[in-house]
Image (cartoon, rainbow, N blue to C red):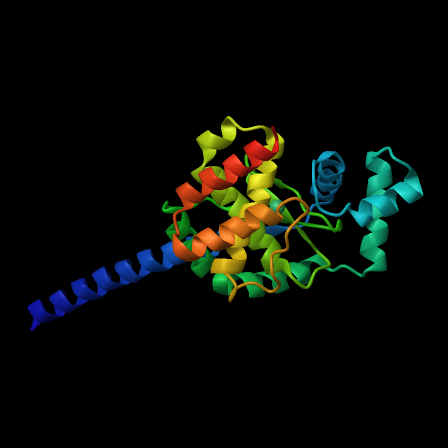
Amino acid sequence: MRFVKLIVSVLIIIQARFVGLKASLFFKKIMFINFQYDIKKDIQNYKIIAKAYSTSSPSWMLELYKKQFGDLLDEDALTFFINQIIQKDSLDFLHIIKEFKFKWYPIEGEYLSRCERIFDFKIPVSSITAYLTTNDKCSYSYMGGYFFVRANTNFPLKTIMHELLHFAMLTKFAEEFRNLDKKIAYHILESFTELLNLEFNDLLDTPDRRYFGHEKARDIIRKEWRTNKDINLLFVKVRDLFLSENQ
Ligand SMILES: [Zn+2]
C-alpha cells in the first residue's frame, strides 16, 4: 500500500512538472509582446517618421505639430505637443494597454504559429515591445526589438500583425535584405503585408491597406500565394519586380 502511494505521488509530481513546463512555454508565448508607454519613445517615433522614406500618406500629427511649432523637431516642443494631445484626447495609457492586451493575447499564439508555418522557421522566444504613440504613423526598430502602435486606434491588431510581419521577413531574409537598397527593402516589406489579408483575415480587425506603388507587387503576391505557398520563391519574384522597376 505504501509502495502504491509512493508511485502515485511520484506520478503526481511528474505530471505537475510537465503541466508547469507546458504552462511556462505557453506563458512565454502569450507574453511575446510587451505593451508600454514612454513619452521619450513617443518623441522618438515623431523623429523617425519625419525622416523615414514612405509612399503612404503623410503623418497628420506631424503636420499639426509643424503648424504650431515649425519644422524643427525640438524635444521640449514635442513634449509640450504630445502632452497637449494626451489631455485633449483624454488618453489613459494604462487602460489602453489593458484593452490591447485583452484583444491581442488570445490570438498571439495562433498568429505566431501561422508565421512559423508560412516562413518555415521557429520564432525566437524573446519579447518585443509595442510602444504606444500619439502619432498616427507607426515606425519600428527591428534591431531594437520594438515597434509603435497608435494609442488612439480602434485597430491595434492590424498594426501589431503588420509590424510583426516585417520582423518575420527581416529574420527570414536577413542575408538578402543586407544586400538590398533601403528603398527596395521598404517596398518589399510593405508589399508582403498583403499576406495578412490572405492568411490572417480572421484575426485582423481591419484589412492591411496597400501604399502607393505596391499595387503590382501585391497583385503578384495574391495570385502566386493562391497556387503556390512558397515564401522563398515569392520573395525572389517581388524583389526582382522592384529591382527592374528601379532600373
Ligand atoms: Zn509597414
